[in-house]
Structure formats: C-alpha cells, structure tokens
Length: 410
Image (tube, rainbow, N blue to C red; front, top):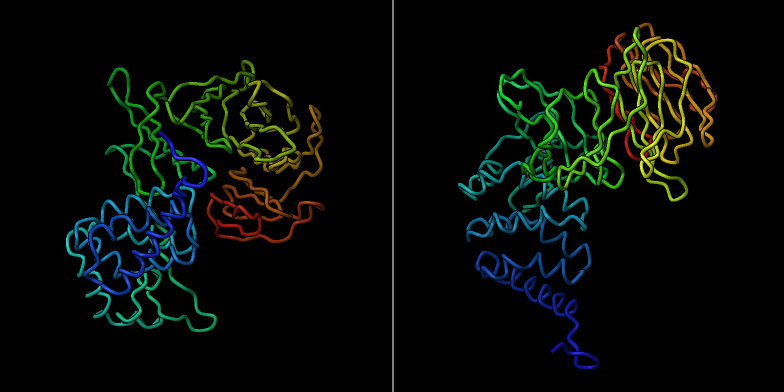
C-alpha cells in the first residue's frame, strides 16, 4: 500500500539529501569515492531538483569524470548526462561536448588526457594551457585558464559526427527545435530493390542511430522538423508533393498535394519552412516550388491556406516568421520578396533586388532579411523599410540565423 499523509515520504527531498551527502563524500574522499557515489550522484541531483550551481560543480570536474572512468562507471554516467533532456546549462553543455569529444580516450586511459594537457606547450595565439590545479571541463575544452580581455575562447564547434553509407551523397540535414533530434538525407544510385532508405534519424547529443524512414527511398530536396518535433516534412527532388512523417515511428502522416506547373513548368518543391511555435497562431508549413509559387499549409487540416504568387521564376528558398504573418521567398528571377499574410490573403510588401544570380537561401531575422545566391554575396535588408543594409562578398550559398534573430552566419 502507498503511504499517505504525514507519514508519506518526500522522495524529492530524499534524493536531495542523498545528493548532498554524496557531494560531501566526493569532496572528502576525492579519488576514493565509492562506485555508488560516482554512479548515482547525478541521478540523485536530477531527481532531487537540486540547485543548478551544485549540479554544475559536479559535471564540470575533470577529477569526477576521471574517477568515473577509473572505476568502470564512466560510460553509464556519461549516458545519464547525455540523456538529461529536461536539464541543461552552459556547464552541462560543456560536459556533453567534453564527453562526446574524449569518450574513447577516457575509456581506454582516463589519465592520458590530463597528462597530455599538463605537458602540452601553450600556443602563441592562445592563453596558457590549464594547470592540473584547475581541472574543469570548461578549461579542457577551451584550452584556457582565464582569457585575456578581448581574447576569443576557442570551442570545438563539432558536437557530434554521424556516418552514412560509403559512397553516398549527403543532400540535406534537419535539426529539431530542441536540438535533440537530427535527420540526414543521403543518396546513392542503387540496383537494390527496394533501394536503401535515404532518411535517417540520429540522437543529436551522442550521435546514436535511431533508425530510418522505411517507406521513403527517394532523393530529398528539402526537409524540416515541425516546432514540436513530432513531424518531419520531406520534399522529394523533382516531385510536387510534400510528405509528412512521424519521427518516433517512421509512419507516414500524410501528403500535401497542390504544387504543379502544368506541361511546361515543373511543380517540384525546392524548400520548406515551419512557422511557430506561437500561442496566437496555428503552425503553418511554407513550401517553395518550381511552379513560381509559395504555398502555406495548415498542418492540422493538411490543406492549403494561402498561395503566394508574384515571382517570375521558380521559387528556390522560403522563410516564415513564428507568428506566420511574414514570409520571405527567394527565386531564380534574382529577387527576394517579403510578404504580409492575413488569413488567406498574401500581399507583397517589398521586392528586394540586387542579386545578380539565382537566390539560393533566405532567412528572416529580428529586424532584417538576408539572402545568399550563386553570385557568392550575402545581402542584408532592413525588414521594415526594405533598404539594403550591407553586402558581404565572397560568401557561401548557405546562411542561417540564430534563434534570437540577431546573429547571421554564412
């Protein structure tokens, strides 16, 4: 029988007390901490909802991870940390990067990493290599003790690497909004019947293969996750249909039909983008097509709610605001259009010109619109006035904007 009332146990408080006791053991016994302590301290901290600073102190300690791997529980504790989806902080992200980068070395020889760091000469372009008296995950990752004023910290940009089949071409990558799930689309000519599945899901934290879409074998031109991560929209190269899949099961949820340019113009879908999340607007999917149009789809009803017409060439890029009130499209006609969406009505607000070649990508920032194209120039316009702010030559065709809408990467 379950206990109730005054005699009921406060399990969260119990976990909190165990975490505090194990922290004392770590501080006092150092390398002699018990396997139970090393194996369970993070779990008790998470279940006890302890202060973030206390949890950060544990995961930031190189000595803690060294002891975990020395005592044979490193892989298990690392898996626990990588699986903490509801709990994060800069220190936890540092620890995840550290474990992703150095897990094989820690597994083989926990002492070798620290030995190499302590003996390595400092590079002229960076600050000193961290001493062993400052054994923190952050120091190992950045290669710094304390940065000089104005000096950049050096971070390993690669969190995880995933592998495809040998001889395949990587065509598209999609990342869920919570950064937990990744989808990759690869392609190779194959004589197999049926051909190999071309879309694969991965755990974005540890690179674990989560399976493929068993029913999809085509060449992908675009794919994107819905804001909630429960739907993956996929456009197949040369096709006018958008397919919807459930990542968890791989099941097909539906197909969006509507694009099509007739006999002389293909209706192939080239780009996809979801709106949201927004408390005041439904989630819409924007699709850009060779038929010179952008369509907005209501995801709940799986039907077209607006058609954006105005480009004179095939539409190659699209972006949509979180509230689904603004759409930006780029085209082979070398223009970028900004649209205002009001229900089923779409009005062109700006026609942004200046690109000398086909537009490949567009992004919608907090107060700007940016595009990139085959002319290798990134252009930024003021979102409200449509005036050109700046042009950045010798840039790549791929651009992205940060979640805050203030930082552009290209």
